Image (cartoon, rainbow, N blue to C red; front, side):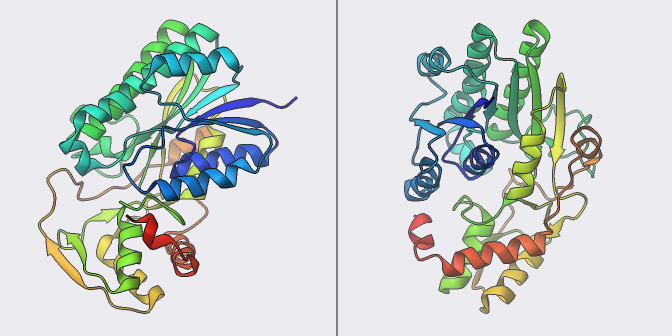
Length: 323
């Protein structure tokens, strides 16, 4: 018997891929997204069109910030589980508009949890972030005290995590919280460094590099992230799990150097001081993901970057997506 899943943020970078993987394995998916203009709607529409070819996919333009819209969905469908991948992302912009981050990431999660409670849906997979680990020793472990977020984005994700824990304790909802580490890949978010670096090197446009380039990131290829996300559907109670590159952080300067090599062009770099909300280094301890999910990444940063650059070089519309 086919199962029906709710995927929030279905037009997003990760959400669209998770929805596609669920459809490919034979399940029904109800995808929702508010299609906001934080970045190019053309890219979101392209992702959505790839999902709409599936007869087992239903799309609704719904904003998880509005409980009445969420509640109506749960009245119409019976969901096996909820993949809550909708989010306002971006550390720096969260300092400019913290309210929208709390509304989407925290209040939106609460709306979903309450609809689940009322309709006896027992499983949520919740996307969270490595940004919660700012200032803590490497490698980052799930049992570290993440009580000092340095951006509204991280604070809103922490709020979502603890609200999910409350609903687990009070109502028995099974929640897998996944802390993602620097997800990248083809058709990624245009505001993120991989997309910006590739496009600007490709077009000979000056790019901004914050800091001296020695800051490191535990890059994780999007297909690995989505595979781990699906594995987290299993019953775990309430668990927080890192999904990251697995102790293979790469300096941003080296990452940019790889892009120059793959594109065949040198970058025009404008250097600026490090942003106070940025982390100097990330590194995931993924031993818990191995133990609970049987997961570890299979695509190296270099291989994933080769695939990503290939997508940019063959895409005729990647520049318009960046606007």
